[in-house]
Image 1 (cartoon, helix red, strand yellow):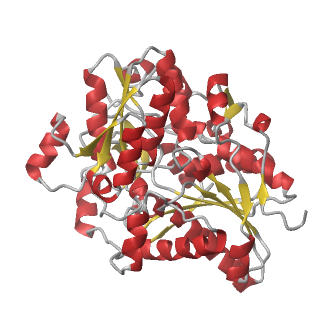
Image 2 (cartoon, one colour; image 1 turned 120 degrees about the horizontal axis):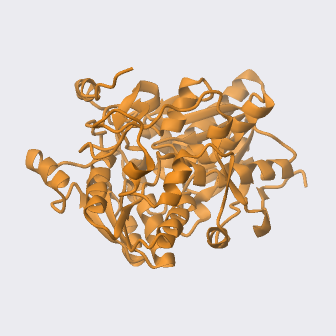
Image 3 (cartoon, rainbow, N blue to C red; image 1 turned 90 degrees about the horizontal axis):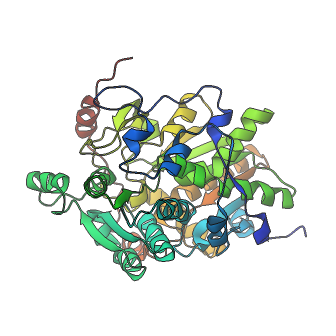
Length: 454
């Protein structure tokens, strides 16, 4: 049908393997370093935090890593997710471009995050773990791990960035409904949280601080491991089901993208849609453009430094080489809480350094404007994070209109905004502003980067 709107794959087409981009990169990513010795970390260094199966995935160079059947079985609840042709949006923009979006908001938690949460819960359960601690920004990751804890009978403790904890009470309620415990971060429950509150009792929190609290809790108990919702190699790996499905669905549409777009905070949904296409570019010499869109108030790729840094504020994690704004940097409290992270995934950062991807940033008002236009055209109101991808896709479509080019645009709509309605209420009331960070604060955070010998 020439006017098809959605492309649906049968459950049997769920990928059987995750795709590991490391296998196809022209140069390997820099090693993760132990902050004490400045030597590459080994599995033993990570074992207090992660089960060995995930550690092995973290360092793997194999192209395909098999998805366990129990994980694929749960994926069937919402995967394969639909691919849509945004025909009404195309008409609204009067563009010759064709716009497609992969919609991850159909998962029970409403975003792409369960793709890795289910996998991480499975491997922890298999290793005999009873309890998992984690952090969350806007709450999409916390909701997803809470859901996974319910499926696998695991106790989940979530440290939620305080500004998002206050902005998004329904995300908190969803986590609690799934059986998780949700704590505002920074909290008085950890040494790292108490230290930050002693300096600033009204601290809005950050993902770096919440990570510190969750890691501290995991390190103190033998029955507890830590889970991260983005940034790490194995997390990005698990998300590649998105791009693999999208490739099959684009074939169904007898089309192929000229540009692939996703929002980027830590890098997981961006990697999910883009890594299979980057791999195709590398293996087959294709020229698909890959565009990462990040918030202008936390622009790690476009304004950050490519350097070794801690993944958390209290410096409890190993050192990874990434685009970073500095581990002490606290982004302003804009509504896309899932994008308020000081660093970018090392693999995404490495791709940027190799020139395999492009990046641009937007302020939140332009993104909400795009999200509202998308909602009125397509009927799906995106999460504030996903609005960045929508903005990028709309601007690419408008570029095609100006240039008279009928290009094909594919973007990842990483989640719905049903738990983010206060942000839309504030937008319509004119209460949202384009928040800026202080240049002096960024300079201070970057000045505090650890000294690592070349």
